[in-house]
Length: 573
Ligand code: ADP
Ligand code: MG
Image 1 (cartoon, helix red, strand yellow):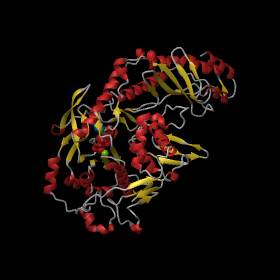
Image 2 (cartoon, rainbow, N blue to C red):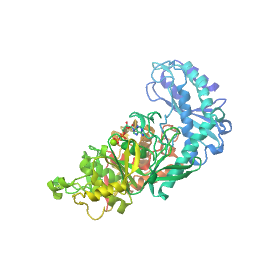
Image 3 (cartoon, rainbow, N blue to C red):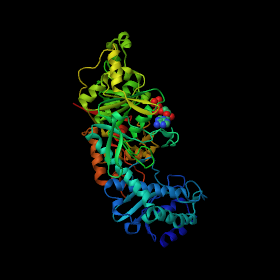
Image 4 (tube, rainbow, N blue to C red):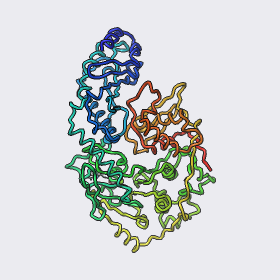
C-alpha cells in the first residue's frame, strides 16, 4: 500500500502515460491484494483493468456456495451484481477528464451467465473491474487516484466480496433458483419435451428496451392448460406444475396481441438461467433451441439450402449456395441449415419475423405459379420431415396460415395470454375443410454437408494488431470486418459478443480453425477447452487477465463465423 502511495505521489502531475508504471504490479492492502492487469494509456480510452483478490479465509464463502460448478457460476454472477450495485451507491462528484474516477464492471442482465468478472476457488475470490485512473486533461491527478484506491475501493470490496457483509438468504435464493432451473432443464428430454413453462411465470417484459418483468398488476401469470400440464421435481422448489411443450411440431396460434410472440420469446431466452424475480426463472427450454428468422442482406457461404430452395434463376447453385445479399427466404433457409449443422434440436420460429413465401404457398398460388417456376419448397412441406428424418422439433408461432393444421402434433392457442390445447379442434377443422394444396417436398429431407472454414479467410488483424471489439450485442468488429449479430437474438450480453470474437481468434491461433475441421468440430473443440480451462483460456494475453467475457453458446460462435463477410469454406465431399 505504501509503495503504491509513493508511486502515485511521484507521478502526480505527470503525463498520463506515467500510470503505465503500475501495469503488471500488485499491492497488498489490509483486506485484499490489488492488481493492475492493464493500464490505459489515455484518460479518454477504455479504462484500466484492475482486480482485487481476497483470500478465501477472510472472504469466508462456505464451500456449498461455490460447489458444484453451477453454484460457482451463480456466486460469481451474484458478486458481480453486488459490486455493480455498490458502485452505483458511490457519491458522484467526478473530478477530472474522460473516465477519471469511474469504477466499472460487467453489468449482468436477467440471465445468469458464466463470466470472468469474478473468479473464485477455495483459496481466494478475485473480482475484476475497470477503473478510470484520474487525470486533469492528460495530467495525472495522483491525489484523486489515492482517494479512489484507498478510500472508495476498500469499502466497495468490503461490502461486496465478504460473505459476512452480504445478505446470505438472498445469496442462497440466487443459488437455489438457478440450480432448480438446471435440474428442470435436464428433465426435458427424458420427458419428451422441448420446453417447460411453470404456472405463475411472468412472461411479458416491462418494455421493448427493458428486460425486467412487466409489473405484476399488469401481467397475467402463466397457467398451464390441464391437458398439457405436468409436474417436474426440483431440489429446492419441490414439485412444480407447468406446461410441457412436447417434441414434434408445435403451433402457437391465437389472435393478434394475445401473447404468442411473448411466449416464444421466453422460450428463446430460457436456454439461459434467469435470476430470482425475473418471472421466467421456472421456464426452461432445450439448451440447443435456436431462433430462426429471415435475415435478408446477410452473407451466406456455401450452404446447402436445396431442401428448401432449388432451380434459382440463372442456374444459381443451391447445393453450395453463396450470397453477399441473401433474400428473406434464402437467408431463412440458410439459418435453418446452419442451425442443424451445429446441432440444434429445436427450431423456434415466429411468423412476425419470417419470410411469408418461405413459410407457406397456398393452393391458389400453386395453381397460378407452377412448381417448376417456384424455387422455394415452403417450410410447411418440410417441417414434419425435419422431425422424422433429423429429429428436429419446431415451435412455430402462426396466426395466419391454417394450412399448418395438417402437420401439427400440438396446437396451442393463446387467448388473452392464457394457453389452451386445441390440437383436436384444429384436426377436425383440417378434416372438414381439406385444403387443396399439393405437398411439394420430396420424400426426405436429405443429408447435411460438412463445411470447413478456411483460416486464411478470417483475419482478425487491423494493421499489426488483433482487434476484437463488441458493439453492444449488435455487432462484432474483427480486424477490418464487422460481423452483424443483430439478428442473433439469443445473444444477450455484450460480453458474450466479446468472448465470441476472442474465441474465433483463439481458434485461429491454436489452429483449431485449420482448414481441416468442420464448423461443428471447431465449436466442439472450443467448448472442450473452455470446459477444461475456463473462459479465460481464450484470453489473448495470459499476463493480462480480462474481466469482460461472458460465455456464449457454441451455436452463436458458429453463427458469428457464418456471418463473417470474408469467410470461405470448403465443402467436404
Ligand atoms: P402476439 O404475438 O400474439 O401478437 P405479443 O406476444 O406480441 O402478441 O403480445 C402483445 C402485447 O401483450 C405485448 O405488449 C406484451 O408485452 C403483452 N403481453 C404478453 N403476454 C402478456 C401477459 N401474460 N400479461 C400481460 N401482458 C402480456
Ligand atoms: Mg406476434
